[in-house]
Amino acid sequence: MNWDDTTDTPAEERLVGASADREDQAVEAALRPKDLGEFIGQEKVREQLDLVLRAARARGATADHVLLSGAPGLGKTTLSMIIAAEMEAPIRITSGPAIQHAGDLAAILSSLQEGEVLFLDEIHRMSRPAEEMLYMAMEDFRVDVIVGKGPGATAIPLELPPFTLVGATTRAGLLPPPLRDRFGFTAHMEFYEPAELERVVHRSASLLDVEIEPDGAAEIAGRSRGTPRIANRLLRRVRDYAQVKADGLITRDIAAAALAVYEVDARGLDRLDRGVLEALLKLFGGGPVGLSTLAVAVGEERETVEEVAEPFLVREGLLARTPRGRVATPAAWAHLGLVPPRSQTAGNGQGDLFGA
Image (cartoon, rainbow, N blue to C red; front, side):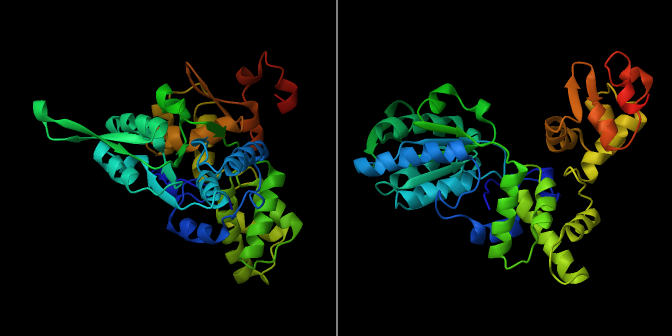
């Protein structure tokens, strides 16, 4: 229900990947909330953004520029569309990678209408010349268009109508301070709590005309890795299973059976996640082990392990990155039902817990 971002990463093919494929984009268009009242979760962000938009409407002015940061699938694109709807303004959508030259950005900016919302996804991936042009456009609502080359080049100032830039990024740390400081409102999107995801699943099931019991929604929410996009994707797969294997009603048992078929376990780990943990535990005794060695053991590229599997495993407290290499935590041993060697438990107070 709350979604955003598309990136070219190996995660696209995973059922629990947060990037949106074409099927996700098609379904999400029908499920997106239309205003802040419908948007589930992100309570602080919604409250603060509501104040910003109400104040702008009361002044009869365009809203301040907005920067939204957070992991894929949490609702950045959805919020940008809600901002446009709340301000009763049109929205233009583009992305940082699509703007490789200052001229690309100048063409977009010069065609904006007064009050229009420009949504710039993955803003940190924009080219440096375009980024520098954006500074002036955000602050002074004008750009300098360079005509000609060399000593004879001339800068022609071009006035722009007031507009609202909504920038979205999954890596806020890569934004240069001059750009970040020009946003009047910044917000970080947090991962969702299971109770919030249950509301997301119930709302999506209603819109998709799917019958689901509360415990079925809870089962799906618990495996959704704190991300609404993943919750909606799992809901669609469980719906398919329920229609083929049962009477169409999603219960806890049906949801669990369906997600077992798709290899998504009770904590939301899939085949790749468990493969990394099993290699770390069974082949290397829980570590420490180097990333390259671990990737070879799993049969995946180093970048796939580091960028696709590890972030969730670290966030779940199942794996730790140390100067000596990757190390499994006691929770990883417990999750896979394995007993850590004594060397792993000595001195850390975990021996009694694992019976070692």
